[in-house]
Image (cartoon, rainbow, N blue to C red):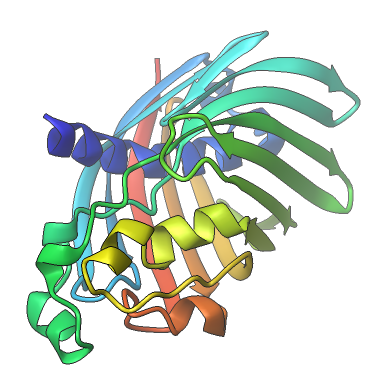
Length: 265
C-alpha cells in the first residue's frame, strides 16, 4: 500500500508544476482558463541522481481546481490568504518528491562503494506545510515558497525562489524560469546522507548539511480550441558537490520533461 501511494503521488506531482504555471498568474484570455476545473493526461520523463535509477517514463493525470479562496493543483492544496494587484500569498500543504525505497538502489553499484544495500533504509516521502507568495507584473513573475516537513520524515525545511518571464511566440506562451532551492541540513542529511542507524550497521557515515540547488526551466502552453490546452515543461537542476559526493548519488544534475493535454470543464 505504501508503494502504491508513492506511485500515485509521483504521477500527480507534475500536475502541480503545470498548474502553478498555467492558472490565474498567467492570466490567459481564452475560455479554458476561465474554468475552475481542468482535467487531462500527460507523461513525464525524469532522471534523478539516486544511484541505480535512470530515466523513468511515467503517465499521470492532470487535475486542477482554482476557486476564489481554495485551490488544488495536483499534489498541492491551499488557501489564498491575500490577493491584491498581482501579489498573492497562500497557505499550502504539499508533498516532497525526493523519496526512494532502499530496494530501488542499485545493489552492485552500492557494493562497489563498500555499501550493502540491505543496510540502507527507505527515504520516505514528506508531507510539507508552509507559505507561498508570488508577485506578477510587467517584469515577469517572482515566486517564493517556505515549507516544513510535518510528517516526521526529515522534519526539516525547504526554501525556494523562482523568477519567470512570459513570452508570446505564435500561439505559444513560453516562460523561461531560473531559481534555486535551499534544503536545510535535516532535509539534505535525510535524503542524501547516511542515517545514524545505517552507520551502526557499518555503512560509512556521510552528512552533506544544508545545500543550495540552482535550477533552470521553461514552461510552454498553447490553447487548442476553446477548452483544450497543450502544456510542456522542462527542468534542469545542478547538484552541489556536497550532494553529488554522497554515496547514494550518481551524477551532478537532475532533469525532467513533462508533456500533457488538459481540458477545462
